[in-house]
Amino acid sequence: QVQLVESGGGLVQAGGSLTLSCAASGRTFSDYTMAWFRQALGESREWVSTVNWSGGHTYYSESVRGRFTISRDNAKNMVYLQMNRLKPEDTAVYYCAASPLRIATIKAADFDSWGQGTQVTVSS
Image 1 (tube, one colour):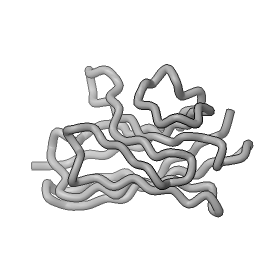
Image 2 (cartoon, rainbow, N blue to C red):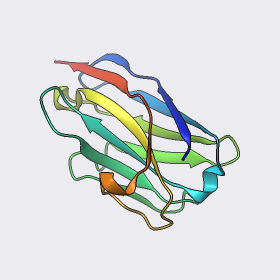
Image 3 (cartoon, rainbow, N blue to C red):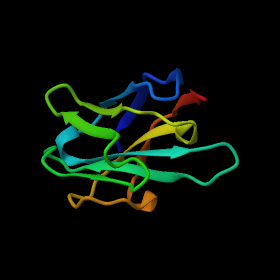
């Protein structure tokens, strides 16, 4: 497993932008597929985006495609989520997750390392 620490959450008005960061430590970062999930209050955890081990392939949920961009820097052991044109329905705790599988996956069960989460609140 790897240790993950998210940062960058906060309060933003609708239409604004935020960039989330996730710092990884403990294992070889480039061995892991990375993803972002989110969980709104009273809702189940929802997959947001996945990036493969090299950063060359990215995947997005329908709700964020075209607005969010996932990226990673293997030299810095970091993964990012650039969020643009934010909407109130994007309000949630955002979690960074790591999977030892070398396939791009969107299933939470495939991820064995999770951060503590960072709150994103979008006001209308």
